[in-house]
Length: 272
Image (cartoon, rainbow, N blue to C red; front, side, top):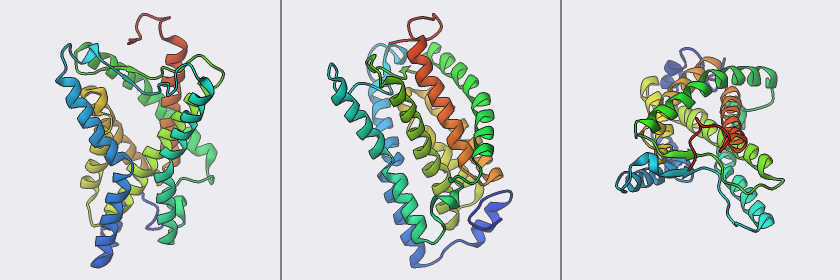
């Protein structure tokens, strides 16, 4: 195992390989810029949204957070164009990270374990993680909403057109790639190079993941914080974000497509 591939005990190697002097300042600025262009900005946006929700009359569960909505109601082709544009542009920070890692001569996203070297193992591990986390996450959401700590999450509100399910799947994959590459692989690598210890880096990654889900409510924050801890530990064990991308994508696909198929047809699933 190389220093570029985290695993058991990788925190020590990373601290020993931390950069010094001007290079540290460059890496710090680079990390802040990447986060400002992606999920760090989403965290600030989610906090503002949460403040608006808790200060609004009626309670959190009386309000809704829509994840995949229409951008051009009544105009399906224009709506499709906006959906694809949104998915593509959301992945630009991942392209930026790949570029930065190539300039570092670290092998691009391969340094984070996001490649096609082990597709079967990545998918298999991801499926097991998704099965373990998906059900408990649903129960946590239902419990938090019933207790008044969460908004009603509406995974999709797209028109019933031919591209609905493919767009939901593409949106799920985009979420998974963006979050796991940046919040786990990239952020842990950079924090290690900046001299952060394993526990501090784990806390930073997990809190960041929880922060940009805060628009869903307290339940969304804590549920994703716990998921963040689990994902960081699995990344350090496996040295790859591939299984985490697979797990996250499967969880979101089931949530998005499942809601599209079940909303209004079963009594236990909250709708707006």
